[in-house]
Image (cartoon, rainbow, N blue to C red; front, side, top):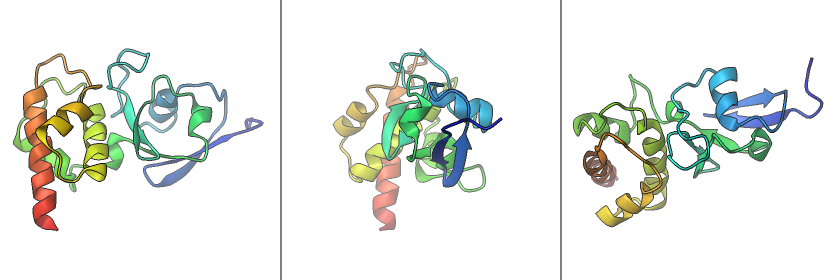
Length: 160
């Protein structure tokens, strides 16, 4: 049975219609309805960054964002940044710098770093650290992640 007022969201370039409860967290719709499991459940209250997605270009915690808040908007998950065959510059740099330990937080960090590089293509190390401040990594890989973001920024600048 279709929902009375379905929610329409563009996810990674494809339009989707979600029925059901509009208060459902965006994270659950992405993972359960679309099978996009790269976005992780972390703290459940939007404080750790594991669940970050880009919502109209802004890093947003999907665990405490109700589906209705994404109606008519564009969502980009880590799956929308690149894939194994065609990784983004950031994803390549994370591999080069071996910037992931357990990897649980990496999807949210890649999303935050993507937003930073779109807004600030030539960031300082301070810019990178500030942009990733809302993303927690319990493995202690933050310095490698910062180096990876700086590498990706340098490669993107060299390519232009």
